[in-house]
Amino acid sequence: MKKSILITLLILSGGYKSMAQTPMLSNQGALISVKNNAVVSVQGKVQNDRNGTFHNSNEIYVSGDWENNANNEAFVSNGEGIVHLNGNNQTIQGNSITRFYDLRLENIGVKYATIDVYVDGFLRLNDREFDVDTNTAHVFNTDLVAVEHQQGGNGWGFVSSLENGGLLRHMDRSSVYFYPVGSKLGTARFRPVNIRPTSNNAVAFKVRMANVDPSSEGWDRNFRSRQVCEINPNFYHRISRTGGATDAFVEFLFDATQDGSFQDIARWTNTAIWAAASTGISGTNTTYNLDTRTSSQPIANFSPNPFALARLSPEVTATVAPNPICSNDTTIITASSSATAFTNYDFYVDSFLVQSGPFDRYALTDARVGEVPIWVVGSLADCGDISDTTVLTVYQGVVANVYSDTIIVAGTSANLLATGGDFYNWLPDTALSCNICAATAASPVETTTYWVEVENMDGCKDTASVVVDVREDVNQIVFIPNVLTPNNDGFNDTWFIKNIEFFPKNGVKIVNRWGDIVFQTNNYQNDWDGRYSGGQLPAGTYYYILDVGGEWGILKGDVTIIRE
Image (cartoon, rainbow, N blue to C red; front, side):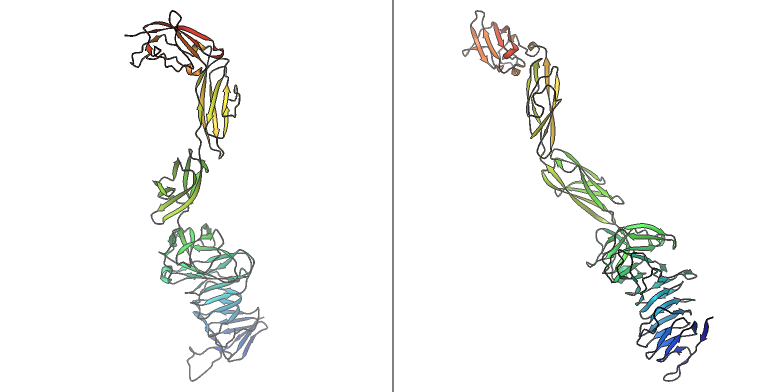
C-alpha cells in the first residue's frame, strides 16, 4: 500500500508574508526523499532553494507552482519519479532549470513555464495547454510515446509558445515523432506536426506553432518566389533542427475548412523570400479529423526555421516531340502543367515569341539547323509567370530529287537518277539494276511508279517519285507532225517531234521529192523551221527519215511546208 504524506511547510523570510505568497513546501537546502511507495501531496507551491534537491522514486502531487532557485536541476534521482501538476493554473519557474523524469499536467487550468523545462522520460500533457512562452520544453527520451496527450473537456492537450519557444524532441530512429502544438491566442487552433527522420542517427527537432500571420513576425507573405502563389495567412510553424544533421519528412495537420485549402509547403529562405520547400502529399488524419500535407521529399535545410502551408504555382513543363528533327520536319511543342492549367501560354523559339494565348501546343516548322532553345511561359492571374526551357536539336534536312518521268518501249530500260542525300533506297526494288544506288536502270514490263527514299548522314529523309511509262512500240511514244507553218504565229513554227528527247541517239534526214537532203542532224532538238542553207524552202511536200536510235528502228513519212 502507498504511503500518503501531506506536507505543509511555512517559510517566513524578511518579515511576514501572506499564505498566498508563502511556498507550501521548501527544502531550504535539504534533500527531500520520496521512496518506498511514498506519495507526497503538496497543497500549494513547491520551492527548491539553497542547493536543495529531491530524490523522487515515486510520486509528488503539486497543486501550486513549481519554483527552482537552487542552482541545480532539482532531482538527483535518475530514470524514475513522477511529478503531477494537479492544480488550477500552475507555473514552472525559477532561475534554475528543473529536470523532471515523468511530468504530468492534470486537473484544470493552463500550465505555464517561465524557464526551459527538461523531461528525461515522459511529458504527459493529458488535455492541458502547456504554455512555455518563449521557452522550450525539452524531451530527451527518444521513445515515440515520450510525449503523450489526450482529448478532454479542454480538447486535445498541446504545447503553446511564442517567438523561439517550442517543443523539442530527441530522436534516434527513422519513425514518426509527434509534436502536439497549438495556440489559444486569437482563434484557438490545434495544429500538430509529425517529423520522420530519414535515418536512425541521433537528431533533435524543435517545433513551435505560431498562431499569427507570418508577416506580423517579420516573414512577409508578399515576398515570394515565382513558384509560390500564396502563403497561409492564419498561422505558420517554426521548425528547427537543434542537433544532428539528418534530413526529415515533415507532415502538417490542419483544418482546410477553417484554414484554407493549401496543397504544398513553403519555407522562408536566406534570401528573405518564401520559396517552395516541397510539394505536399494530401491526406487525412482520422484521429484528429484534420487534413494533412506531407513533404514529398525529405527537407534538408531548417535554417531559417519558418515553414508554412502554401499554394504553389503548378509546374509548367516544356516538351518537344519529336526531338531531334530535320529542318524540313514539323515538331510539336507542348506546355504541360502538374495541376491547374494556366490561363495563358507564351511560346518562344530562339528568343522570338511565336505564339501567345490559351493553347498549350504549338506546331513548329522550318526550324533553323543547330541547337534551338525553346522557352514556354505559363501565366496565372494570382501566381504570376512560371517558365520552363528545353532545347530542340535540328539537323539539316534533305530534299529528294529524281530524274525524270520517262517513256520506254516494252523490253527496254530507263535510266533513273536521284540526288539530295548520302543513301538511297528505291521501291519497288524489282526490275532495277540497283535499288540502293543514286543512279539505276529500270526495266519494268508495265507502267510503274518508282519511289526513292533519300537519307543523309544525320538520318534526315525525304522521298520523291518517278513514273516509267511502258509502251508496246515506239509509235506509241514518238508523235511526228506532218505539217510545218513557219510564219512565227507560235503554232507549228518548227517541226516538233513529241517525246524525241527520250531517244537522244536519234538521227534525222529531210529530203525533197528528188531525194536531195535539205536538213540533217543527230540528236534532233525540235528546231527545224523549214530552212536550208540559211534560206527558206519553198512550200511543198518533203520526206523525213527518222532513225530513232539503237534497236528502235527507222520511221519514215512526209511533212508539208505551208506558206501564206
